[in-house]
Image 1 (cartoon, helix red, strand yellow):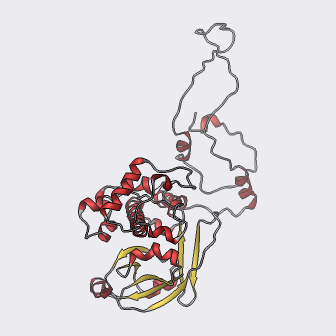
Image 2 (cartoon, helix red, strand yellow):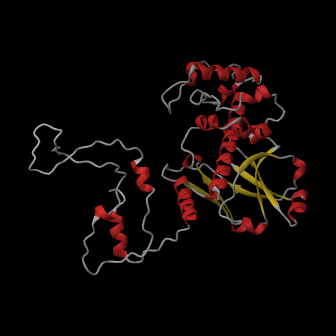
Image 3 (cartoon, helix red, strand yellow):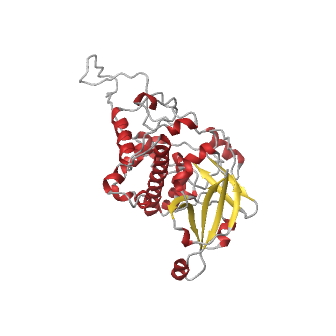
Length: 351
């Protein structure tokens, strides 16, 4: 598979910013016939593009973000350069991989959106309100509102049923049982199947291939709107763009540093570092005592000569979250030269 990128320049951008600005658009060519069905729906009017301030930014950038957006042909002139992407076979242990284009010093970083939003596309799309589906509505701007609303949810497709190209030529929607997924080991609900039938009829799909085109196109646009809304919310809240990170934990770490304005000290004593590493443990969030006997005037067998003792049971929520919200040391670590007796009860915020 080959992806061709074209450098473009728009007059309104130059007037607006007062300097030369460029965009890079992506057109996919030389595709395997099976993959062609998936990309066919983008056509000439839809390319992957990102605005870059100037050519030096792309030369030194370690990420070129690819977002599907509609663009008319007359908006650009072509300045092509090529990058080959062929049959990536990556183990699941990778959270990202990068393709480097030697001719242009451009790096393309591919990141799994699930590393940021650990929910299904169906669940995420149900959170958005209709006004949030900006890119999807722009892509389907010529549709009636009733038709467009059918696309504002995750579509339904028979992944395992389509095992050869001939299946895409079938002129009717497969049976409900044909939507069984080996991956999830379950089929689809009657409600989902009726939705698929409604989409097939409403958009006058002539065969399963056209239905697949619509399904794939809708899937991409839904994820675009979801991730763009996620980016906007994160940037508004923390002033940081998740697109420059690999995972959500990495993003939250920087958000913590930015919010607290904390400067972490670099530990240079290897013994101190090993001391910390040996103390790392899993998320234990309970206080347990195997055996205890109450001794007070309200219980049978009270011993007045022994100290009074009461037992209480607390059902406390968010123990782990509470502990993670407490103050933590960030520097000034040193070994004690003299032994000191630490009174945990007096110094800890727990007691």
